[in-house]
Image 1 (tube, rainbow, N blue to C red):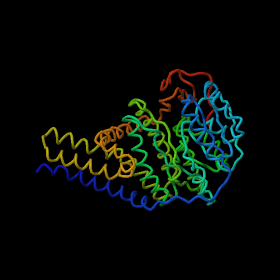
Image 2 (cartoon, helix red, strand yellow):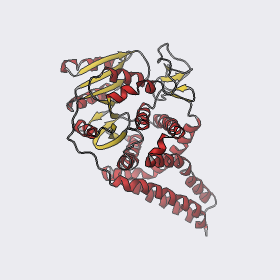
Image 3 (cartoon, rainbow, N blue to C red):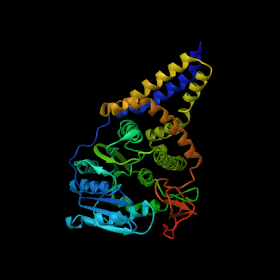
Image 4 (cartoon, helix red, strand yellow):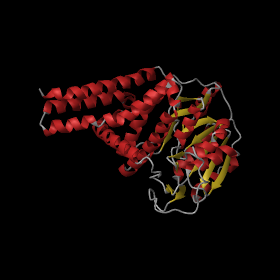
Length: 411
């Protein structure tokens, strides 16, 4: 019987489902900290070639949250966004800092060093907040052990295939892995840079390690959110999710940019996770360690099923192929139920999403093989000869201007 070929795959599938249940069950018991505790908070945003309409919408949403101040650190070449930010100066809650240093990290550092409040929200310049984000993200800081708080994130007005795929990935992440990490160990692996809130005193404490991060001797440029999160956890602080703090960001609408973005994210994750395992601090957070190792292994195991499917089709084992296809559809539907309850129209995209998920596993392996490359991929900034420089085109690291970051501090 041809179905016998599915037995080894079934064993692997069972193990993968058990690991998913180990995340999903505690995620079901996740509860946010209710609002009540309040502290003054400043929004710091690095701005570089942002869409003007989105940038205005983001600023308006932050100010509606009654934050103490918004500090925009704008690249000196971005005259349009400088003009937009300065137009808010009459509110008395806007400061505009211009920078000629390429790269996001230096801009973030300039912003939180200039801030005066105890809490700092680091937000991307294309991230729009719901009107009640501030009270939700402030609440966990009533606990002095909490060093950072993350938000729930979705795609702003998703259109087309790739933005809807990104939205599906986000819902899966925030209703599964991140919720479970917050519920079990209060150790979220990454407080996404689209919006995360930190104690300013901790940002100042880690400033040198943040700016000077290196991997295998090369200065790191992206992955700022993952770096700050791991610095908090390594130092013994807690990181938690406030899923009721809803924010939205823009995402690529083209396949090429979608893949480039996820390649950059995958490289950042590999660097951070490999370092955490080597240094050993992650093993103090048992559930975080489990999800980290499990996520790394899934990049390999996810590719076994399409190999079996290809062999089944090649040998005309139609029953085996059909069983595997049904399994894919049922399992992915179950894992994405929180998303489909919000956007049922994406059920029609599920077969394509399964295919792109398999392709993304190969992207993660490619990212591991090229983990020493440091390129933004979707913006004209890259690490060249150990320095962060501007490049003439996105993803082109062949040349750069004389504007560079300070020399890296070994990490």
